[in-house]
Length: 116
Image (cartoon, rainbow, N blue to C red):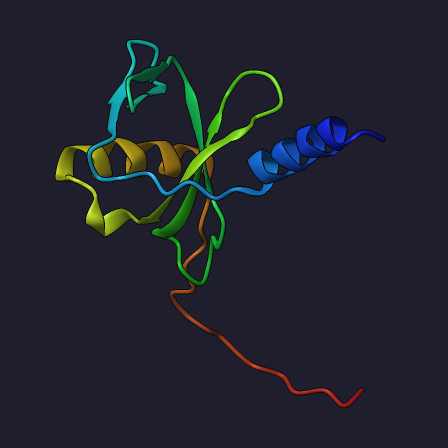
């Protein structure tokens, strides 16, 4: 393989493994259809998918924002939802509520300890 081919492979590998942090200046809006769109660094995404990376231990931290169409390529990560503006937080929380069911234990009736 030539050096040029190796450089292309290295660039593609770097693009695939790079982590992009989404800043608080990113604009998330709810679309007419109830989905979420994103405006980031001069680029508009008509519809994005938001995925919790740690759904139970840190539900509002490390949220992956992905393209909805195609392969679902990651656009970037929101490190902490609390660092985002209130309007953005509301839009994202609404979307996450639709996608995730998080059970809450409200009462324990009995516990049984069995050997083995």
